[in-house]
Image 1: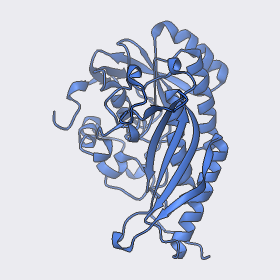
Image 2 (image 1 turned 135 degrees about the vertical axis):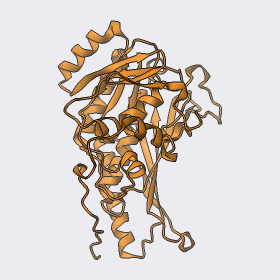
Image 3 (image 1 turned 180 degrees about the horizontal axis):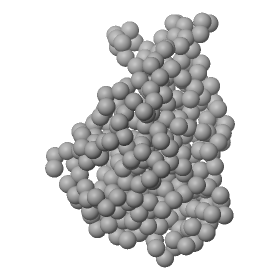
Image 4 (image 1 turned 90 degrees about the vertical axis):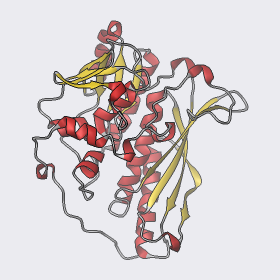
Length: 345
């Protein structure tokens, strides 16, 4: 099998000026279809999960359902085409890590995953390299995260009529919910709650919506990712959820920190007042999509216990700010109110 490698121009963050108009970035990214509110499955929902509505209903939009024996289960579907042709193994590992982190934040236990590769011609050497790399990434991620892999591992779908389209991998992750009473949703719960970020911030904007949509640069490396760090983060989240210290938890995903905060505030109409890291470029801090980070909301009465536990676990974390009645503020600059943060407004 011949080795296939696509040469791309090596992007570095220094190619983008540090002097950026953050408000202009925000309101331009509002028009990005990948950051629009769609539904629970792609993590962009504006609707909070209503625990009281969990039932055997087949049309539960939250992705939560109850099996015949009463076991609560959760399912989510995620897709990725970015860099499958460049680094199919790591791209697939990142996709699985994102799916698992979302379930862990929710309080669910990832159990099994299946995958499908689209627009791959396995009769072509390039397709074989992508398929082999994706398979290896899938197996490695499942081994690290202790998830069962569907026996067939990866299914293929290829039609010549599709024309020149990106190879795409779609995964479906199934998880069990051991304790309904300990479920944690992504939405802010109360004005005045403290907001912390678990994980390290990086001066990284690779493969972000900010870089691709706002700066129109589509060729860049994958975002910062370390599967061992991701695994440690999952263990920490399990401890925190069991401790009952969290009022909300949300993985930092598409759109970076800012849009993850936005998704946490929109369902309840709460805003946020945050302070950026002076040692990290503001655009990278707010819109970078480096892996291994989670936003958590903490009741002020539990803040000391949270800090004590996090310090004992020796995992990077920092105080980001607090939940507001509706206003969005960054470094003492007002961005208006969250009920106006939609393209139509």
